[in-house]
Length: 174
Image (tube, rainbow, N blue to C red; front, top):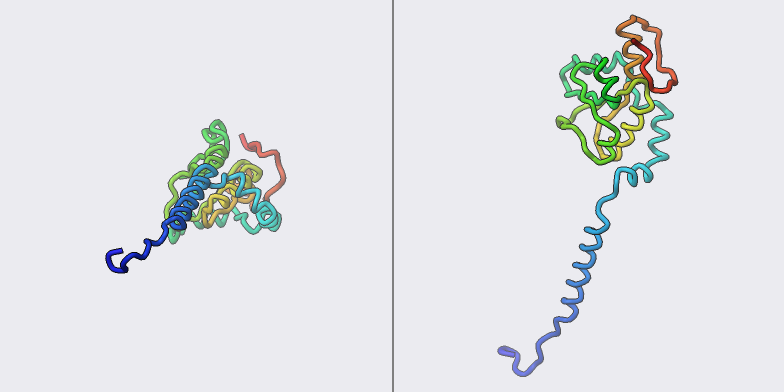
């Protein structure tokens, strides 16, 4: 009015409506929240199944041993076995984590650029954990082929001809 004379001031109703719409959208996001690990797994199930079936994420125990002693990249071994099995034997410097922790998005500290190798007695729980790590967007995640059972077949018993075999994810070594 001061500069234009008697002209009416522009209406602020559209700006107020847009602001209210943005506030409602933000509240909707807060209420709905981020997708859960289960949601992310469901979205990528076919892709993850195909990668596991092709065994493109499984690494041989000899490769893991070489990585652990190489020193060029940090390596973190995550063991998803029960505490009792963990206490009997685990790989040196491995970190025990449960599938429930991964379902809740709780990860142990991982160095930047780390190669993450997941293990169980065989492969079943390790593959389940690998799926969750991929859903949590952990890069460079792999599964120890044959798990701790194959590790002990190769490095304890010296069976270089041993390979992964289907199992019930129970320990085969005393």
